[in-house]
Length: 65
Image (cartoon, rainbow, N blue to C red):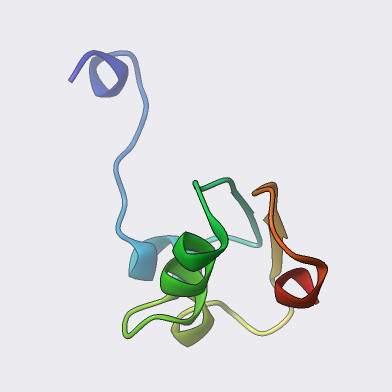
């Protein structure tokens, strides 16, 4: 993978949630946000207390709340 060869790192949702203080996310659709954040292995199950999720997905205000 060219990006990894240039220093990018690959991490699972679980690893990201456990390690990051801030997570910036942009996925395709509101249903994707629900899956990535609230799915069976979603970020909400792994993020540290006090960490912040910033969602850049074009989504509904209710889901953002």
